[in-house]
Image (cartoon, rainbow, N blue to C red; front, side, top):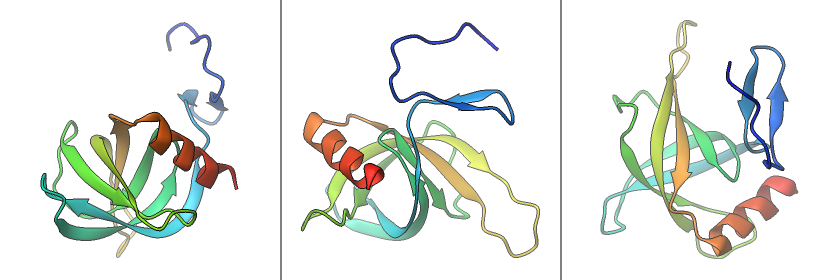
Length: 124
């Protein structure tokens, strides 16, 4: 474990395993669309939780850590979904029979308007 980070107002401590989260997460039950680079929908995946910094998707897709994803996320407060680029940062393997694996995605290239919309949704 390295030195503590400074100047991170959204930092949460995860005492169970000593890891740190940068942003508060909100449990959700919504579908997030994976799109191609032209914005055409390819596949809808269930999101389990979301934060200003990323989300957890339930999917048994063979995506590698580091893969870039084009995401379309519906927000309850907006008529149109927000479109973000994400990067796979972890794969969650489950051992329970019938359980669906998960993919941890970090948002990249988030503009201030998108960040504010995500923050409003996570905060309510």
